[in-house]
Length: 381
Image (tube, rainbow, N blue to C red; front, side, top):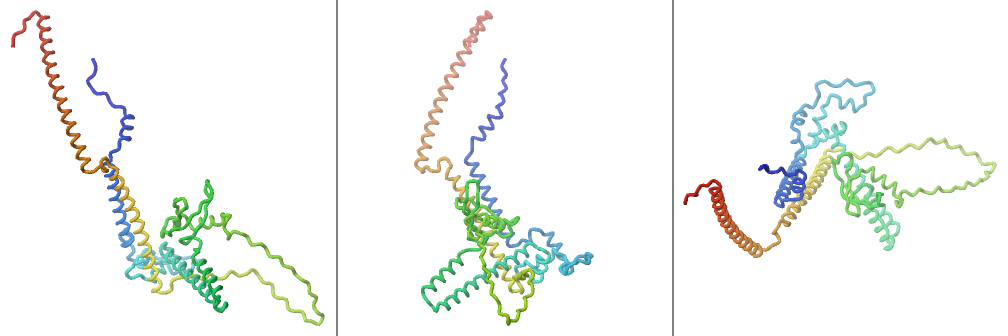
């Protein structure tokens, strides 16, 4: 006797069917959830940019005390920096230094000496800005001196201005707009630095875009390595040594011998000209400008993410079944489906009536056969 229990479906076939069957409504709901999550991340990113101290309340509480309970014992080789920072609480100074309402310059100095990452980044940014100002001023003075020497000649002035403009437009290595070439398996591809990302992990703060549309975050060391490996880079050409010819000249006898110049030792390397904010006003302007640039970058990144999610939702909604049909076409289709349902309903009723007739006929024949087999006359109903 066959079992009445339904057979279990094959797991593999069911899973494959479930994977192939995609519900458009569910896909739209998932995209809307992703859009909501992107908006949440955007708001949280704005909160982190505006009030980073709210992320770690425990750190804010622990940074109340400016001094440690017991200073460390310093050895004989301790530097002035070690003596200065000994006994100070390193967590106390960064919140005071980076407070946008009242930034403390002395707290910034102590945070910088304590190797705080953000303080180090601010100092590096200040030095880069000052170097750029000096370079622009030097180029401007060179252009003015060139104009004075030519006596105001129109042709040479135009050539000098065009050369200065070309040099000004050419960015330095690692700056925004700097172009380079990188060798891949398929050959050399040209890239361009489009943005500098502050606080990027592991120094990958140069957003680069290649000519084929691919983007990659690189370090400043990577760009130097690409420039050194590029055979078409003019800066890699080694200078040819100059040939010098010494002529022997006989000295007159009555000439007194000159004193020999003392032997020169190895040339001393010039002391580095370090650029650092030296006043409260310089530091305040630097901090506000840096925070504004970070806010602009974060807002642009979050806005791109939100717009991408919104475009994905619009695309899924536009691809839902029936979205391209007009109201008249949809109403006509609904009328056709209603008529089809009525026709199927009538067919179902006819089939049900025939089934009832067959059931009564089977019961009658079965009763007659039973009575005939038992020799019993069936009672008239």
